[in-house]
Length: 374
Ligand SMILES: Nc1ncnc2c1ncn2[C@@H]1O[C@H](COP(=O)(O)OP(=O)(O)OP(=O)(O)O)[C@@H](O)[C@H]1O
Ligand SMILES: [Mg+2]
Image (cartoon, rainbow, N blue to C red; front, side, top):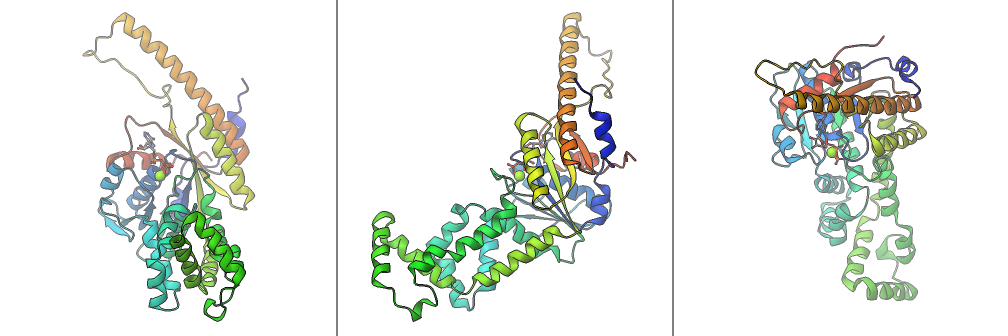
C-alpha cells in the first residue's frame, strides 16, 4: 500500500477551523446525506460563541433531540437566543421553507391583494413541497436575510439533505426558470393577462390538459402564473445577489464527509463540482472517524478482571479497528490530494448520537482546537 499521508499533510495548513470563525461572516456546511452537516453546523456555532463570537446558526431538520438541545422545540424561522456559558451570543434558527417563501411573496407582491391571492392558491401551496430545490433555495434566502443582521457577526448555515448536494447552488436558477415558465407564457399568450383574451387554440390546449389533471388544477395553475406576473424580476435580482454573496471572500464553504465507502466518493464528486462552479473549499471535516487507538491508552483497571479468552477477542477487535482506521485515513488522504482543502479537521465517532450541549461542545472542541500543522 502506498503511504500518501506525508505528501498530503503538507497541503493542509491547519487542523482547526478557528481562523475561519474568526475571519469569515458566513460559513456554509455542505456534504452528502447523513454525514453530520447539521451536527457540525450546530457544534461550530456553539464553539464560536464559546470563544466570544456572536453567532447564529441556521439548521435544517435537526433530529428532535438536537432541536430540543438547541431550544428549537417550537419551529423558529426567526433567530432565538440560546443560553450558553460562552462570552459570545448564540442564536439558532430552524429553517421553515414555507414561511420563508411566504415572506418573499409578501415582499415582492405589488399589492397586499396580489400576495393574498398567491398565498391562497393551491398550486403555490404545493410548490414548497413538490418543486425540487425549494428548500435549498429557501436556505440560501434565509442566509441572505440574516447575513446583515447586526445581532451577530458570524452566520453558520446548514444545507438540506439533498440527493444532490449541489442543489442549493442551482436552486435559485431553477426556481426562476419555473416562475418564468415559458410553456405557460406561450399558452397564456404572454403579457398582462387581462389585456389578452385567451385564444381559441389556448383554450383547446387547456381543455386537453384539464382532462388529464382535472379542471381545478389547471384553473389554479393559470391563476397562479397570472397572479405571479411582474414578480419574477424581484426574485431574479435577489437570486443574483445571493449568488454574489456566496462568492464573496467573507463566505466559506466547509465540506463534511465520513471517511468511508460511497460517502468519500460522493464528497470527491461534490467537492470537484463545487470547485468547478468557481467556489473554494475552505475546510474539510472528516466526521465519524474510527478513533485512533494508538493514541488512546487502554488500561484494564483492577476492578475489571478480563479473562484470557476475552483479552484475545479484545486484541483482535483492536487490530481490526486499527486496520479500519488506516484504510479510512488512506481514503481521506486521496480525497485531500484531489480537493486540496487548506484545513482538515478529524472528528471521531462519539459513543452516541450528537444530541445535547455536551456532545456538541465535544465536537466543537475538535473543530476549533488550535493544533496548527505549520
Ligand atoms: N461524530 C459523531 N459521532 C456520533 N454520531 C454522530 C456524529 N456526527 C453525527 N452523528 C449522528 O449522525 C446522525 C446524522 O447526523 P446529522 O443529522 O448531523 O447529519 P446531516 O448531514 O445533517 O444529515 P442530513 O443530510 O439528513 O441532513 C445523527 O444521528 C447524529 O447525531
Ligand atoms: Mg441535516
